Length: 285
Image: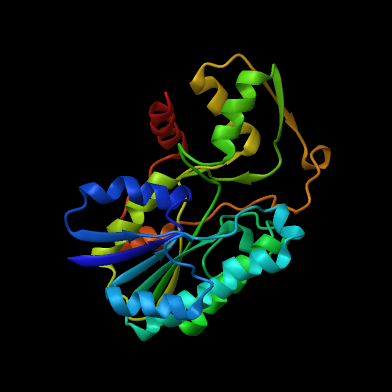
């Protein structure tokens, strides 16, 4: 039995592991959030791992409020980097594989082709800066680890772009959505299943970085328009440039991730973003 600790289990990705866990006969899950394990408490993390003897830690915890991070800088850094250091060091101490979730926001968005794992990071927001620092903590302190960068994560639960558009679309006749930021929506359920599919084939005694998102490319406008059409909501989606929708944090204009490495190394098939959106929307009906 492969023993897995999931941190941040009340978040979007963590909740997908909650859903998957009962049907996984080969894995034993311990699902935690801050109430069960405060990952900012270094000693508590080490004690927890010593008691339970985990084979793998999947770190789904993270400070993800991109705009708020610009003012709550210390808090964002603590969750996205300091806590990650605690997990990485404890994983190394207890010989566990650490799977750490990172983001496309470690890049500046000035590329004109999908980002490779080897491309230079250059975050343009404090959120991206803290996530990159978290990656560095993993590389510095973990013994064996998979860092998985993903993008535009959404799910049928929690606060995310999909649920926000559905809510506002039912309340308003028109929504103005940015059309010049390009990336790929990723269904959290697909990411969770992909992570579990890597574990049996992951003979990792080193630290590796991989990119995972759904297939395809779109703008936030395209994503919103597809959501409204699939839901059958009578709401007009109007494309606008980023300049007309100012935010506290800057976003990459282009953050498409190249998935060639993860597909080559693990032989996984990745669903197209519209297909995954449709499946997620069916859950919400």
